[in-house]
Picture 1 (tube, helix red, strand yellow):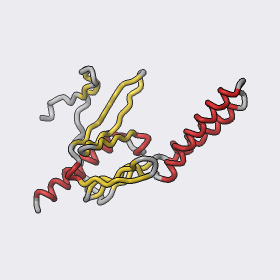
Picture 2: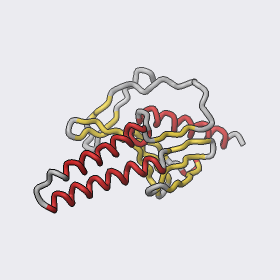
Picture 3: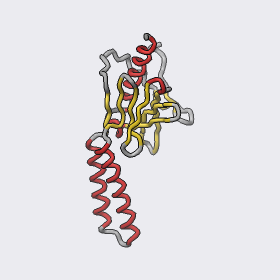
Picture 4: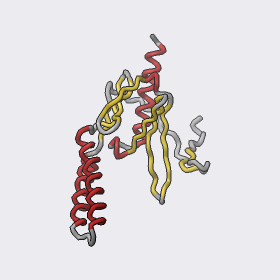
Length: 172
């Protein structure tokens, strides 16, 4: 099996990643893992809002000012969400706790997590990766900006937690 090639496909079926799967991680798994929005992303949103608001001072007419201020307000809203609910995804032996809505949280036991998938897309020459957790009627999607770690690392960690939970459930 080590000689097999790992291929991730994009929506049109073209091979986009031929890196081999990572070796099995034998490090001890912590009891709780929390992924949060990096502070630099939060401050970047505040900075972007300030820059857009400052640029609105140079607008020629009222509609331009309104558009700029609405954009600045949107960036501030995202930055405040980062401060109010910085932990986007939490794993523990019981399951997954994910941010929901603006600042709410929802818990999903491991038994309802049907699959974990790495969604990798190429858009305008930029690779965007996200982790998708299928929890029945809910699909949880988080990118690197939400987690503060590379998405592939998060996928491996979630799979290890799921495997541990399945092993504990199966041995009872």
